[in-house]
Image (cartoon, rainbow, N blue to C red):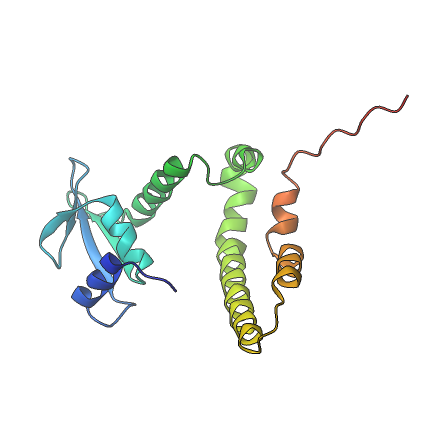
Length: 170
């Protein structure tokens, strides 16, 4: 995993235990307060801590309600806004259409496992690819073709892609 200098500094501040949960309090003015640093933080700073390997927990200061999922969703939406897309539009329509029923079960039971499996696959592939490079063998074209065909999301996202129109036969 590649970490930025800022992420490394933050990880050092919070200690070596990367699974340490960092507690934040959310105040009514939408500000987040880091209880360990005793300082206000931005969504971007919370995202950096998560990227560095930490877990975050956010509690509403007034109601004491756990609002972690809401804040993490807000971070994801901010990231998507920067890139102008996170998920394909047809998939977003499905989420809105069936969100409370079918898709909630899918997200709760399967999506996390799919992403974890993908990351493990990618890590194993990267390690194997590194070994091939160390053998002074160039498998780059073959690897790109294989990786494109083996992506676990390939068939899932292709169902939402628009199919190109075939030219009309005369």
